[in-house]
Amino acid sequence: GESVGLHLPTLSVQEGDNSIINCAYSNSASDYFIWYKQESGKGPQFIIDIRSNMDKRQGQRVTVLLNKTVKHLSLQIAATQPGDSAVYFCAETRPAQKLVFGQGTRLTINP
Amino acid sequence: NAGVTQTPKFQVLKTGQSMTLQCAQDMNHEYMSWYRQDPGMGLRLIHYSVGAGITDQGEVPNGYNVSRSTTEDFPLRLLSAAPSQTSVYFCASSYSQGQGGGYTFGSGTRLTVV
Image (cartoon, rainbow over the protein chains, first blue to last red):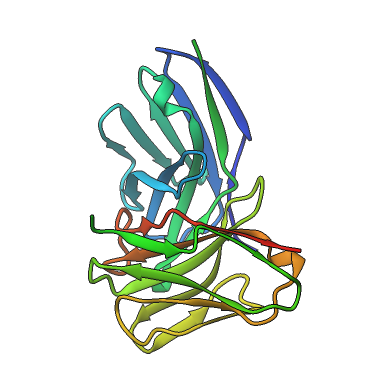
């Protein structure tokens, strides 16, 4: 079936470097693509979203890029900090407000 | 603080027992959903509701029932617990359809079925 998937399960970066987390999707009918951050023992926390008719959206230290041609989504985190350590999920909204999640990427920050 | 409240936070059940996971939100959100998260996997949709009195099935509905008698509450019932239902359960709510950032998640219920 259709799914939202991630390229890599883990990512390690040096503190202060930029992080890039990737995601592939297969459903072209989604309204929004969303990135969530999940810290240990907590529920997913919204980071940033992008509407399907956009290519790029920026937030505070984060940028989401959407490439509809190759059905690829990425999350860029600038100047990665220890507090950014978490599992990051991409997700998409489908009709009737269904939210479909990918598998997740664990981001580890090295001092 | 406004948000999604889930109870209990932890629960251990014996195979065959039934129980209800509670979820309440105070944001007047129309849309509410239940997800389960297994180790190494993303969240999978169990059931969802687009308003009071309306519910529908998600990806993995078997073994679970829901009802939505009020806007605020969306309980999830396990009819006869099985070890395969050992998981972390999250409830989420959203204010409108087709929005991206409108989903708010609870802190989860960690369920173990022995």
